[in-house]
Amino acid sequence: ITVEDLMMHDPPSIRETSSIREAAELMIGHEINHLPVVLGDGTLSGIVTSWDIAKSVAGNFQNLAEIMTKDVITIQRSDSLRLAASLMEKHAISALPVVDNAGRVLGMLTSETLSLSEVLQ
Ligand code: SAM
Image (cartoon, rainbow, N blue to C red; front, side, top):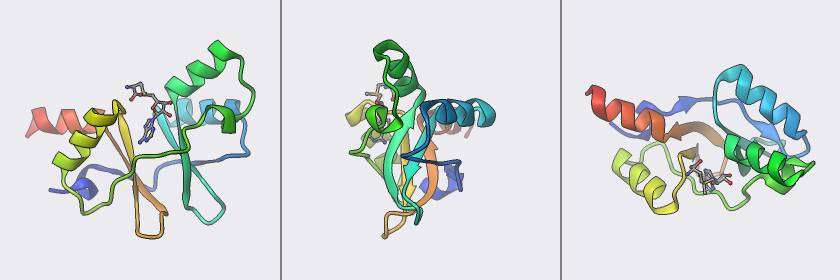
């Protein structure tokens, strides 16, 4: 069992030029907390999470580019779940975009899915 078996395939994503409101609406509509931010060709340029939306309210930020994280920790679909868990723990993050060799987003793996699968197996 690898990252590919537990990741959400083709997750909703957003462009850096979109508004914070659009990001919030996508999260609510899909019941998710993490959105990869992508360029026109589908390559990853950042990540925005519900935590960042809270930050935008607290700090009165107006643009997605101001609140997204640009230095994204990623994983590949053939990587182990153990590697995924250790990256999440080390960096205190709860999701990893799954990218191919060209940096295009293939999926999203969350700590929620990882920990549920641990209990259920
Ligand atoms: N531990 C909580 C969590 O994971 O959501 C909150 C703290 S964590 C430091 C929140 C920040 O991590 C947000 O600004 C978010 O953009 C960032 N973040 C989430 N996933 C990330 C990832 N895979 N790589 C880099 N930063 C990420």
